[in-house]
Amino acid sequence: MEARVAELEAWRASLRNPLSPVHQAAPPQRPAVDDDSVEPEVSEASGFDLALVGRTLIVLGGAFMLRAASDSGAVPIVAGVALGLAYAAAFALFAMREQVSRVSASFHGYASLLVAFPLIWEATKKFGIFGPWSAALALAGISALIVALSWRRRLNGVAWGLNLFALALAPLMMLFTVAAAPFIVYLLALGITTLWMGYELDWHLLRWPVALELDVAMFAVAFLVATNRNGTMTPAAAIGLGFGVFAVYLVAFALRTVARQRDIVPFEIVQAIGAYLACLGAAVWVARSRDIGGTPLALATLAFAVGCYALSFAFLSRRSSTINFSFYSTLALVLTLTAGSLLVHGVASSALWSLLAVAACWAAARYLKTSLAFHAGVFIVAGFVASDLLTLGLRTLFLPPPSPWPSGSGASLLVMVACLYVAWLRPIEHEGSYEPWSWAKLILLVEGGWAVATVAMLGIGLLVSTAAGEDAGSIAVVRTALLSLLTIGAAWASRYERFSPGRWVASGMIVVLIMKLIWDDFRNGRASTLFISLAIVGIALIVAPRLGRKASVPGGAEF
Image (cartoon, rainbow, N blue to C red):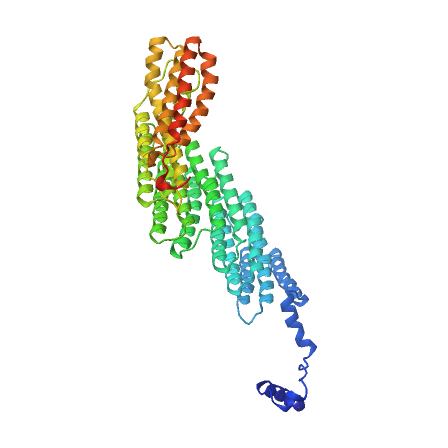
């Protein structure tokens, strides 16, 4: 031993002094190491050790010993269950110590899972010790310990084991106890935990299966409540639960993206859509089907919509990425539509959508955000639906003449005025190009033309139907003349920067005119009315292209 130590000391000295005679004479051999000392290192690297497997089996044997003591009456059932849970928790706590290797800690974590989760299931199903909420609380307690162990020791495999146990046991508990709320709350807590594990530890896949099962479970519960097939949960509880799941996820996303100034990731986009459809959408479904809680749900949704719009503009002021602004503003748009459909109806609904369209158009011009111009277009479509302007346009412009001829309403005029205002949106340059603005403006011009044509045809058609006795040929001529005027007007307006996409509207209207001539005029017209219709369409085909060639382009850019 002394000789060996001397050799090692000489070798270390030679490393410090390259000119050492020992170093020049011969390279030192690697110190011999006892074979037994290699085994722990090899087992640590491989992640598998029969000794650890044997120890885990002994741990499971201890759990069965407690079970046998409880079955024999030596230990009361309640005390046996408590001792079993404490036994499982003890191994998770023991594994948190730094002195325990990571592989050994992993086996301790698996042992805790194998003892605790089946015990909770049996204590609920067989012994009736746990009710729904106490069972969910027991699951949450042992899950918290396993999460702490996984997080502290960076044991991704143990975290996946917890996921698999939880995802398998939670639906079984729902079916057996016929109580979904406790276990949906448990899955929500697990979902948020795995979400932050992805943020902090880069364990990104953990959060996907939990979020999927939570969305599916919430939708299934809402279906049972909406169809009156679940008597254990009230409609108000289902509405609150669905909105709560959506709200908790949304707040978690906001904390990361706003407080930490991070970009939205694909999971957040997918889960926002999934939670909206399966959770908030389910809550709306229950509210409509059971006619309860619509107003509180609408107000809460509207508050979140305002918050999302505020977040989107906060990103503007902080010069954050465009994807965050698009995400929160789009989510705000969807939430606003959802809240508005629950909160107002009739003329009030038309007034709301018209006002929001004007506000979105003003904000688009003020902050130079083309996406807000698209929002204005969506609000106008909602106004069309609320004021019945969409179906009225189809009936008066293209379908067989209605009898009696419909009359316009104040809601239709209000939406038409909003359309004319949003069509006045000034050009918006986006990253050196006007193309996004051009597409948004094209939508707004089409909507404005639809509103003007519908309102005009409601008045003119009423006069023609009164004078001509609902003659289909005469009404076809009036329709053709009105659409031709709009075609020429769109081509003429394209000479101005604000209406430059009007040339595309004119090109599309020419196609509509020809199809309308074949579909309506030739089917319902006479020789005299066909002569007028053909002449009108011919003039439009000559004049509109010539005016379109003089179309203006904003800022001299090319579309």
